[in-house]
Length: 572
Image (cartoon, rainbow, N blue to C red; front, side):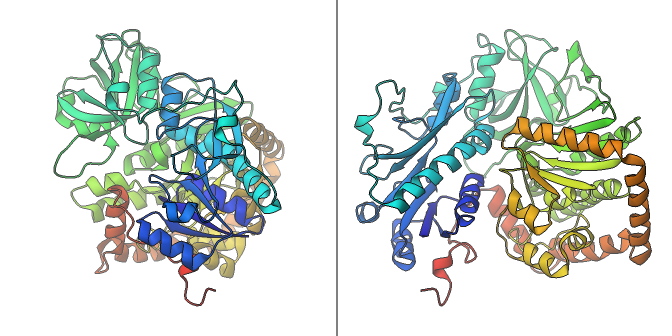
């Protein structure tokens, strides 16, 4: 079928559904929801068999949904209605939630139900649940709904006929007062729920050390204590704030400002000199024992664990962005890890993202974005080089979460790269103002897929699913329907490599020696950075404009042609 996606943006959920539907032979064209007039024009040009709305912030024009079926993906259980479905589910400690695919109608979220899928709730942020459980349930429900529509003769279930045991109900948009933190009375679990219910957007409005700001990226602290509401520690860009029964780490803040635009930044950077006198925790250690701060264990975005001959390095960076400092800390942790008496190192990344490359927010906030871009890409390259040059261990990049841009190519620096089945990769840089890219991609990609296919992969600016990536040769394995199954598969692979380590390491050293003799890694790096220098310092401002628009969330003015198939010249 010809399917038109109407969506606010081509986000992780939209990309996953795009891959699922195109993988089943459907033609999917995409139009960003910019205005009613643009949407009407897109429908007229596309003439779709079906319209799917994976992620909308406005209602579809009545002129469209009255003429043809439009399926809305709603992140709530059957019968749930309202714009803050997942927010309320987290705040109310729901044990089970779901996704419903319903037909657009006059009342928001009140149309006939085509399909639904439920999942157990996890103690996690809204954005994490959305990227994992919601996305997986949406894939199941949308595929079911599309199959029903394609088969024909199926009557969707009216909302009024919903089963009597359904807990769904209409809920209003959640307000800041609904999740405001009372530091003198709220315990750690309550504070975490409130911040997690707003993570991603809009954040929880609060005041920290006299600064009005929105809070994001919260994690429990099990050892530190202090007066409720007091900022009791900071470290690695995060701040630790005491609750009535413990404490929480807050990773990111966004200032509440009326005039000049603000965006999320590491909490310690936002507060700056106001943290004078607040204790700083030591940097994390890659050793199996937990990092120790004042009075006990601290939360860390980098941690290391060992099992038998396998060491696993976890790095949980917010939204997958890797700053200059984070790259440096991860490099240090990696260098310490390969000094351990193990045979295999697993680079596990985080639950939501493996890596998305450069930290664009910190670059945007720098006095010289060009200089910080240069420092950041060199720090990424230093990390990639260290992984590539490792001859004492076998390495595995284990992508449980999505990866994009330089993060994809950093993963390819390992000896093996494997991904969970639902992972989405964006192995290209061009969407960010035609960046050339580095991380030794000109060495890493062609040796996996060949020169011609490397050019196709980096040039098409479209997402690649894990199964497709395996077929292309981009990665070595794709398995595990969920996180637990994936971890088991990675553990089995790592143990298998460890058992054959002597022979595999000998072959690895020989191959690296041959490649280095043919063309040294320093040459690849120099050539890539010469191109990147033009991106950062040259006369073409495309990268700086694209970065600004991304960081400040400037609304789209049009849909890129590589997504809007119906707008390409000659399309009928």
